[in-house]
Each structure stands twice: as structure tokens, then as C-alpha cells.
Amino acid sequence: MKISKSLYISVPYITSFFLGILLISCHNSEKSPEDITPNQVVPTQLQMDYQKMEVIGFVHFTTNTFTGKEWGYGDEKPTIFNPTQLDAEQWVLTAKEAGIKELILTAKHHDGFCLWPSKFTEHSIKNSPYKDGKGDIVKEFVEACKKHGMKAGLYLSPWDRNHASYGKSEYIDYYKKQLEELLSDYGEINEIWFDGANGGDGYYGGANEMRKIDSQSYYPWKEIFSLAKTLQPQIKIFSDMGPDVHWIGNEQGFAGDPFWSTISTDKLVVGHSDTSYLNTGDPEGNQWIVGQCDVSIRPGWFYHPEEDQSIKSPEELMEIYYKSVGRNAILLLNIPPDQRGLFHENDIQTLKSWKHLLDTTFETNLAQNASISASNYRLHHEKFEPNHLIDSNKTNYWATDDSIQSAELTIKLPQKTRFDMIQVQEPIQFGQRIEEFDIQIEKDGTWQTIFKGTTIGYKRIAKVEPTEASKIRLRILKSNNTIALSNIEVYQSGTK
Ligand code: FUL
Image (cartoon, rainbow, N blue to C red; front, top):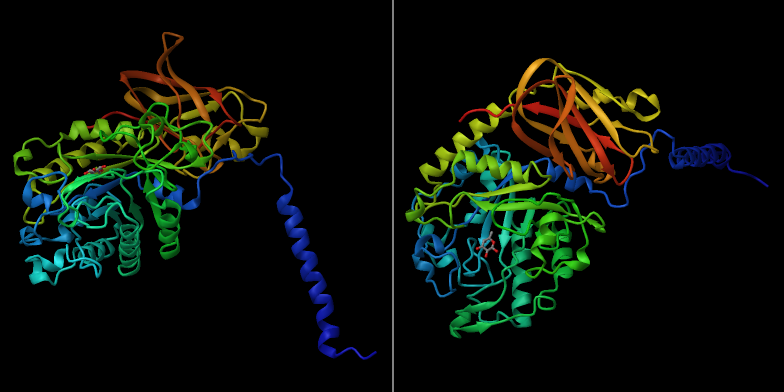
């Protein structure tokens, strides 16, 4: 038999190639005792990146800005929508200076008015005086975000009080077409926001009636979610039931304590979920869904001149920050443009003072020159040393042996130091594990408990009474799997 030269040469190569693959895969599937077994439910890389943004912003803008309403009825004339100085770059730059990493614009709120010239309705900006009907605020917004390194998100209200077919299947087709327009024509959209308010009275093309829908069956959410993911695979979908990000169950911006990033989606319905369940998550939950705390800087979601003096103070925003980001969730802060189409001076001033307060608070990590010891660290391997908790690298971590149920970490500060905050983080790529912890300080030779905590997750900020100590002890009292932490920092609140 005659073997061709090329076959003769390639056989050994092919054999060794497959042998190599076999060896690599055997090696990879072999779990070294050093490896930490991840929990069954862990975040996706997209969710981990999303959570790192920490603070994002909302921009509520529609006909309500001109009528003084919070929920437009749907009969508003597009001619009333006339922002004369609209500047999306002003929104983006103001937000950026405040440390906000993503902005979400209400492309369509419940009034059904579209901030883009949708092909599928006349109830839009194209029939408004804005830029003589030639404007497209979604486009201006996304471009301004892109120009200044801000992620862009869009809110497309499922409830539409203008549309004649709302409540019928035709409306669902319309809704999907609008979603397709928004996610096809404007480049990368980082988040799509599906609100839970659905059904009620409205204009509905002149019917002026009450239309109730069955939230369990009216919207084909699975199809809608998969359409969004097909059009933008990297998009994060927000709704009461995720799949990537879920509502925290209130509009005050507070996550629960405990707050688990795990939750069971079979218990969630868009618009009808148990708000206390959304607020705490579920240690037994079968899905990882990031919690998002939405709140407005003003009493309303939309701009109303009579609220110019009722803007939340920097201290109130700080409190919200501690109860959202500091409880393992995302903070979504709304700043509504005024009738000019600009963020109002008072809101800008508040944002600046708040950012200053944040910066001065988190400027100096008082534990950076500390030393740290642990009651146990995994296999006495340097990879799991407690020192990783106080170095500047947030990707490495401390972990215990698998047999350990509780553990202690002792931080020795270089001198007696005043502080009122301890920030702790878990390496959430392994899932969320810590269920109970406390913090103690050494006073006159004995340990005194200054904080009792539940969950940690991506980030937990433990606010304590201002205290002076040189030794701090963190005790992990209960964990659902091998104990692991990635970071500990100590701070003293700053000034405005
Ligand atoms: C709610 C809406 O009804 C409000 O108008 C606002 O958009 C808020 C963020 O979500 O459900």
C-alpha cells in the first residue's frame, strides 16, 4: 500500500496533537486540593463586571416633564414636548463627575411617548417642536455616553397608556418591534430596563378606559428577554425577575439585610413579586441575579420645579449608598432633566457635594499599613494567606481549609486609629457564602463586639459608632461553604 508523503508526515503530528489535548483536559479536570469548590449558583462574568460599576444613574424625561405629572395618561400632545437647550453631554459629564458609570434613559415611559422617531407610532418626538421633529434623543444620549466613556442603558415601559391595542396581542408585536429598533439602531446598549408597573386606566387611542392585564401571561417575557439577548448578547436585562439584574423591592434605594444575590426565579413575576423576597434575596435561590436599588434624587422621578428645594442632601445620598452598594447591591440614582433638557443646578450641586463626601470618606484606607493574621488559612499555602485581604490587589483572596466552619482575622493597625467603617468583600466568582459575621475591637485587653452582620457578598460596608482602636477582629461565624474573603478596608467618614 502506498501512503502519500503528506499523510505519512501528518499522522504522528495528528496523534500527538490529540494526545496533548487529552493530557490538558485530564489535567484540567483534576481538582487540586488547593482549588475552592464554587457554590452551585455563581455570577456570570457579565454580572461580575456589572456589579463593579456600583453606582449607575437614571434619566427620567418625557411629556411629564412638561405637564407636571408622574404618570402621563397617554393623551398628551407631542407638541408640548419642547426642551429648548437639551444637552445630553451635560447629563453624561455631570454623572461622570459624580462617579456614575452607566446612565439609563426612559426611551418610553408609561405615557407611551417615544424619545426616538419610532417607525411604529406617531406618538413620538417626530411630532414635537424639538428640532422641528427631526430630533432623536435616544441617539444623542447614546452618542454622548459613548463619547465620554459612560455605559448606556434604555428603559422601554411595557405599559403604554397611549397605544390603542394595549392589552391585546397586537400591542405585544408593537412592543417587540420597538425593542428591536432600540437594540438594533443605536450601537451597544449595556442594560435594558423592564418596569413592573402594568395595566390600569389610560387614553389607549381614545378609548379612555381601564385595561387590566394578567401579568403572569400577557407579556411573553422569555421571548422578549431572548430577543434582547439575540440583538445584544452582552446586554444586562433588568426586571422583577432578572434574568441579570432585579428590582430591590422598594424605591428608597435600600437593599435588605441580609441581602443574597441568589434568588429563585420561579417565585418571581414581573409586576407582582413579593417585595420583601426581592429585598433580601434567598440563600437557597437557584439563580444569581444582581440586586439593584433605584431611587430618585428628588421626591418624584420626573422634574417638577416645585421640588427644586426638596432634593436629597449629600448625607441622605450617603446613607442610601451604604444601604445599597454597602449591602451588596447596585445603586441606581435618578436625576431628571428639567424643561430646558438640562440637569438642574441644584441637583448638580448636590451631586458634587455627595461625590466630595464619598471621595474624602474613601480616600485613605486606614488598614493599608496594618498587619493581619488568621486563625486558619488553606493548606498553609501562600495563595490563601490573610495578607491578600489588605494588599491593594482585589483579585486575590484569603480562604480557609474546607473543614473549617468559623474563622477569625485579627488586624493590627500601626497605631490607635479612629474609624467608623469597615468594608469587607467576598470573591463572588465562587458564589455568595458568608451568612453571619461580627466585628470586635480590643479595649483594655478584652474584645468588644461593635458590629453584628449577616451577608457580605460583593461588598459589605459595616458602619459603626466612631471608635478608636489599634486591633480589630473580624469573625466569620457562619458560611454555606469554605470561607473566603477578598478584601478588608477600614475608613473614617469624610466631610462635604
Ligand atoms: C416605576 C414607575 O412607575 C415610575 O414611574 C418610575 O419609572 C420607576 C423607576 O419605576 O415602577
